[in-house]
Length: 141
Image 1 (cartoon, rainbow, N blue to C red):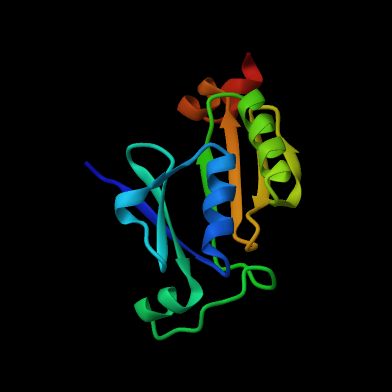
Image 2 (image 1 turned 30 degrees about the vertical axis):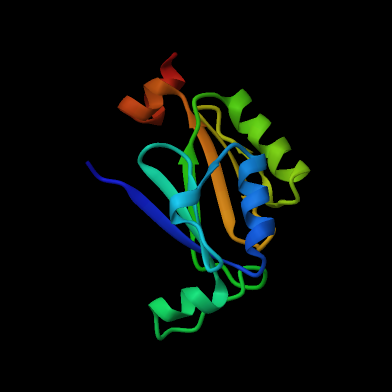
């Protein structure tokens, strides 16, 4: 089994935990302390939200400010367009922002948002035929 742990910086750990819970993720208390919080999306996908000082202990490289520089875009699929739109509303209500306008390609629909620290979160839905056979399959339907 492969699990994914995405490490993201925060300037306010309590705010970050509140935000991620508000948009449907779960805080894992066994792996949460004053330096970090484990945020569970699924049984296989987790975010480790780390204070900037703690994240700096994992690298000699500078930690960028996600409000002014993009280091990574973290994208996850959702089951439907409606779920993507509901998540967009939840993110905005919980204090997140919009990185870019929603993108609708017909066979794929996605949003590009930010958490309160400026980390970019993208959520998308893709038509199952397009996901399996490529966008051309969707166009034939």
